[in-house]
Amino acid sequence: MKKALAAIGALIILIYIIGTSFVTVHESEVVIITLFNRPTRIVDQAGLTLKWPDPIQTAIRLDHRLQSLDSNLGEYLTRDKKNLVASSFIIWRIADPERFIQSVRNSAGAQRRLSDLVSSEIGVAIGEYQLSDFLNTGKEGSKIGEICDNVLKKTAPQSMNDFGVELVDVQLRRLGFPSQNLRSVYDRMSAERERIAKKYRAEGEEEASNIRSQTDKEVRELLAHAYRESQITRGRGEAEAIKIYAEAFSKDPGFYKMMRTLEAYNKLMDEKTTLILSAESPLFKYLENPPEGN
Amino acid sequence: MSEEKTLKHTFRHARKILLASLALLFLLYLASGIYALKPEQTGVLMRFGKIVADDIQPGIHYHLPWPFESVSRPNTREIRSLELTFRNDEAAEEDDYEGGQLLTGDENIVLLTLLVQYTIKSPADYLTGSEYPEYILSRLIQAESVRLFASMYIDDILTTGRNSIQSELKQKVQKSSDGIGLGIQLVSVQMQAVEPPPRVAHSFKDVASAREDMHKMLQKANGERNRRLPEARAQAERSIKESEAQASEMIEMARGDAEKFLSVWDEYRKARSVTAHRIYMETVENVLTRVKKHIVNPNAERKAGNGMR
Image 1 (cartoon, rainbow over the protein chains, first blue to last red):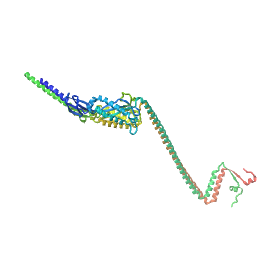
Image 2 (cartoon, each protein chain N blue to C red; image 1 turned 30 degrees about the vertical axis):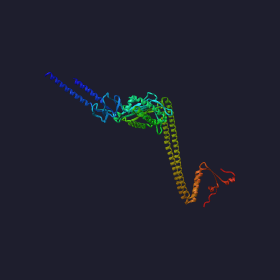
Image 3 (spheres, one colour; image 1 turned 180 degrees about the horizontal axis):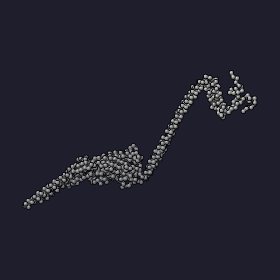
Image 4 (cartoon, rainbow over the protein chains, first blue to last red; image 1 turned 180 degrees about the vertical axis):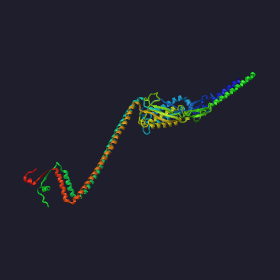
């Protein structure tokens, strides 16, 4: 019976030793092995590792994955004294587990310290730029990326040295005008819209009037061109007619003159015409002097 | 049977049962490594926490039982969506984290709702990149939106820029997500709603109606043009045709007159004196029968000293 108890006791101790000597390290973790609470070894490769059983050596597991942290919305002043409301976020991960444990102990502590550090640097950075560096429709566009990169460059070494934290990224997630400025912003937006609306209407009128005058011009050109064409055609016809007449009539101008004159008499005189004729005219030469006949 | 024998027998029996149940337990332990992956899942196999395979396809598989191996099964074929809004009018409310304005490059404010769809590109990265990948993704999208809109005109954002914003956001967010190894693949970034703040909405509507007015004015002017030009062309054509008609009329009349003259002249030549006289007399006759006439005799007048009627 004693034997059996001893065997069971030995088994329990063995299981305890095996259970605390083998440490599985996940891909998402980094493990610090401490010897009587003093860090001796850092395991950042996933897999199985060995250590002396507790309480000689203990394993502290830390999350090695990316962590994200939002900063509170804060009001900042740009270099040209414009108010901006901004909020940033930080992506970070534990890079130096030993220093991390010694300085900030855990994630909550790290987040508090990082937030303070980055927020103040963001404030400084915003103060170094003008509003037009943030909001810019020009060729280079907004410099927000550059500003954030500067903050990252400034704060990354410090957070590494002080907290053992790698700052992966610092970005602005909110950028706005403070609420006390909104009214004037809205007024400006409205005024600008009114100006644009007016511009559209004026441009419409201008363009429509241009189309009308262009149409006028084309219509007049068309008609003038047609007039020219038709005058040329008429002229040719008339010239041809004159030529035909001339050719025919010049064969006997005397006869033509006679015929034309007589035709004219015929046309000129009608019922309303009163002719006063002389009895001495050749027409009446037989009236008083009968022909003799020969 | 003696008592001792019975005891021995029972004991042997109990040992058998014990052994059998131990074997059964061991088998059950081994069998605990059998697992099934659903069609939308991809298996990631870990041995003592280290990833040894990250693309196990759906079906029945086996892994060594705990504590040797374990399996994570992210839904890689599922399309997840994430809605992000920038539509708080009063951005300065301190405790507001989800709302917020979006400023444009020309210092205007727009409200935006984005719908982002994504899927898991790399199961291993997805599992080891971050505890909350979607949360980090949402922050990346916010940052890229703030940056992109800060370089754009509000007019482009509200009208023609939609497609380019969507594709640019998708591309940039994908790039930064890949840069930090989230293991996420963006499927689409859609602007569900983009609009001016409600307090200035009427001004924006007026711009839209002004643009409409402009188009109407142009349409009207072009309509007039399309009516007047064909009219003018028809008129021009008519006057040209008329002149052509006149010209041929004149020529034909001249030819007729000339022909007539020549025919008459032909005959006239044969008997000039008689014909001339005849034509003259016929004409005079024709004329004088029509007109009122007074014939005065100058000799008689001279003698009588007054005219006769």
